[in-house]
Image (cartoon, rainbow, N blue to C red):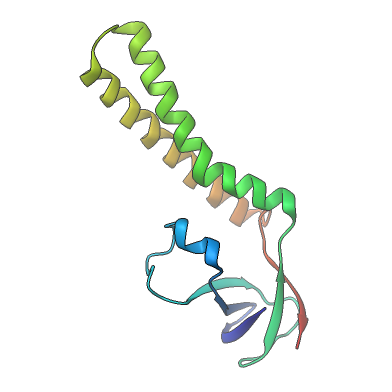
Length: 130
């Protein structure tokens, strides 16, 4: 559950308490905060101060986790493997290719994120008002 803290047209900003497993993620910019703010479409006409239930399907959570955590790792490994095939024994070039692979995968992840937001494929849904 989270508290509605702001309404902007058809969207609502919801403050939710971070869970213990959030501390190892590192995605939030303010790691010391006990809360995070999520902007979602206000499909249930929630009002400021109201408590709402948030829902996201398991498939969407797995896809988001893949884009954020595993795709950069795959980019790193692909860069290192490709460099070792082209330039065997060169650790410096392997490092450069690895960083390039991570950079490309992060750019791809960001593009995928923008696509999902634009097409509302990864939306968090508001379910009920408490």
